[in-house]
Length: 203
Image (tube, rainbow, N blue to C red):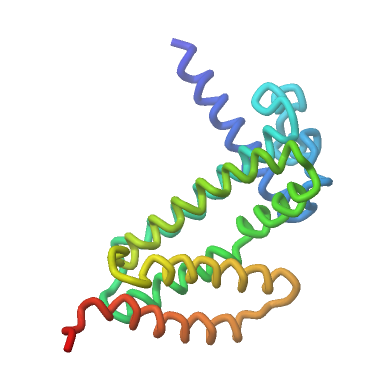
């Protein structure tokens, strides 16, 4: 009878640690996000934290995985409310822009920077990011209702993600919201044309 509550407590502790890790990484970067610092922010003992995540690499890569899942969950949560046509494309592109300017993305960037000079962390992050990239692409295709069997569509979807990421990086140094909205709006119109090309009758 006691086993389930203990499992619930364990899951809750792990969740608090992951959320605290994301906050620490976003605010202090990888160097300042030690297991001890994260445990203190989560209100968990260091021993309990190390029970779940024996090393900082374990904690950070799990946090990156959690961040990625959260980002995708936000995208998926809007699927049922999307309009049709150009309005749908604009909405999806806007959602991607928000995803790449969120605190979750800032945390991921700090991990990428750390991974560029830490071989052990890099090996773990590269595989995870490749998986996240594939899943992000698949979700965006679904949201757009895109047909990737048509020429240029797959590349256009990937370019949308790449554009969102690039604009998110630019936003790290200063609030670039006004220019970003103009760029995304223009891109949405171009993307909508690419997606609609297959629906037009050929001569």
